[in-house]
Image (cartoon, rainbow, N blue to C red; front, top):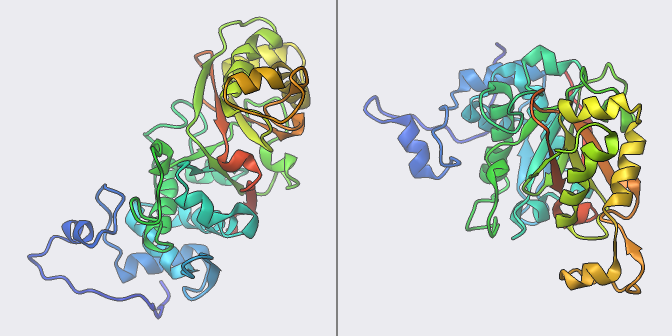
Length: 340
């Protein structure tokens, strides 16, 4: 391990002190115990990423908090990450700090969004990311701790602490951790990162400002149309005129779609068509569009605003609809290459 000059404040605890309780008293946790970030552990993370601790990733625009590689490493250690996960964490923070992602607004809004991390490429198998059973749930260290590292960084470095900057009315479980991999092996289509202009051989993270996922049942089976009916109905909750919405299709649903020979574009076009309602109907449900009552208005402005991802367990006719903060227009999804 290389010797690093760290800028962060150092604290020497007594043998009788409990370091875990120390961080609870400090207010540096997400409500769960954290791993004490020693200089040795931080150094191992910096070695794994090959990055200087003083490198600036970006600045939180309102409070002017500077986000450095060192600060992110500290929080990744605290989250329980392994050093080999750290390049993913860094790429995620780089994505979130891009102006078009609108980090401040997403992390403090009453709407309660959380960063949804979707990982693609060789790194998925290299570090053991889960794309299958309970993909939004517990049980996989890489998924759990990478997402948690982002949350701790948001709280401890940018200052978006619940009740202070973070004014989320409800929040959701993804605000603890929300990191998944796309199931590229099951998917009959090219992967998300390839859709976004990257090579299949590259490892990437795409960060979406996700609201709480809506689980839907695809009980129709048989044809692609029947398998997607529940998804189209579930999209209605997002309201009209969104710039982007995320749909996560599980393998059983994908099986029906694949049997029908549908492309990813056909899926998105069908969902867009089937989720349209008249302006009058939207108005009745509290979503005024300003358009003539008989005009059809989609959940997204175009079919291209429906991002389809394949993930989840192989058994069960379920999928998820994930609306985005600000309708996906005030905060854009951002992808970054994971630098190994």
